[in-house]
Image (tube, rainbow, N blue to C red; front, top):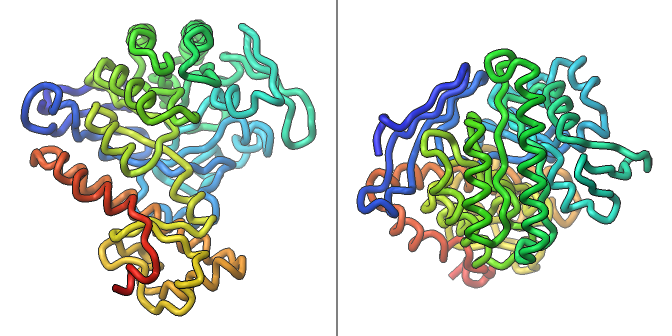
Length: 397
């Protein structure tokens, strides 16, 4: 796999720069560059999530310093508050988030799943009860495109239906068929605004299909037929077992167009990264590193640490000698624990920065391992280390 695999669409381009040597299955893992109007993203890459217009507790400057190149924001939450019109008046998402790099927004489709208890779904769209004031909010495929257009990200997602149970075939079939109908409407609304060339923005389609290989393949065909700048795999990491997730990703990722970035939504953890990258995925997002930081949990090169454990109270060592995050690497563990247990905001900030830095450094190591044919060896070395629960006694020993 070489530079011969590439695409260009207005201000967006994707170029595959390398792959794992070996047979065709091994070569699914690849490195690349996704070019956008606000800069390049070297892939595979992890994208931090800024739900309401910020990466919780972390300055935009520091988000970049720890290795982030592309970040996310949430369409529905920004629609509810402060509203897309306000974001537009304040200069659009890039100024609003004080971020010069690429930004991607989700469509609100995930909320069909996550807010099912306060929403009503029909073939035309979804009606939500606002979590701000209880007002009814109506989102249709066309409205999702209009909101994201006004927010002003580089990339936005089609409105999809994420099924509540990816192992219930009837439910998944209904959701997948609806996703395809909504996709057609999203594409039509996007084209009416001028498409990529007319707006300097890109629309990604979303593959559904649950844990069923045939439904995933059929959804890939429906999404790929639109020729979007990039494509995403949705409906995973929603409570299903790991095997169901594996089936979904391995059925969808390799079948998506090779000359477009492949984005696995809402995933995940180091193990998830290795598994999905081996199947050909390029982009990831998840709240995990920052959410874990806010709950006093961190990954390190020697294992996972829970700073609520009293054994860390007087530990004067730094968190990690391998993954040394800017602004965090020289702060003693005992100080970090004190800040967390005292509910000082700085504690969550420090741990979030460390987790983000580790995720980005792991992606850098993966990018180096792929063309060298060392991805499997890297996985074998690092997944057990990162998943190990590290106690204070083990740390000192």
